Image (tube, rainbow, N blue to C red; front, side, top):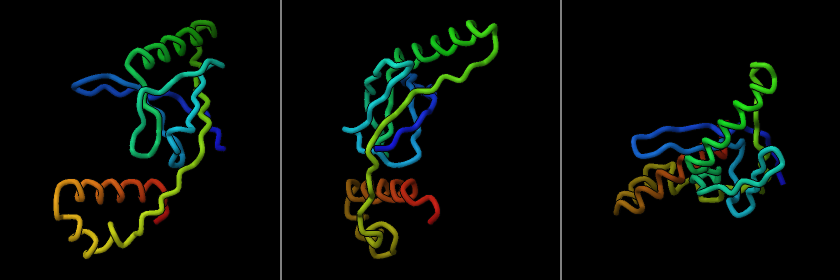
Length: 131
């Protein structure tokens, strides 16, 4: 079980605002446990890497708590980080299916297989940042 301490990052899109935590490794979503100041936070969803996403309300709560800590410390910025415990996921899709000319050609059969190949490339990059 890995444990990391990370801030919740805010993202604002045209459709919505939400929070996200970027982990160092791929995570198995079912094993992700997030706590903030000792209180559990349940993620709304997970991205393709198994990293947690939070609702706009949860993100705002995080911002309010961060501002409260700053006020308590006489205006001095105080980092606020969530604690995330998770089991690491391992990427085991054969590389030739998404990283060779033949594998890419095979993925062009329909939009579903093309999207799967692109997703596998993204996940491989996250899992093997040195390659």
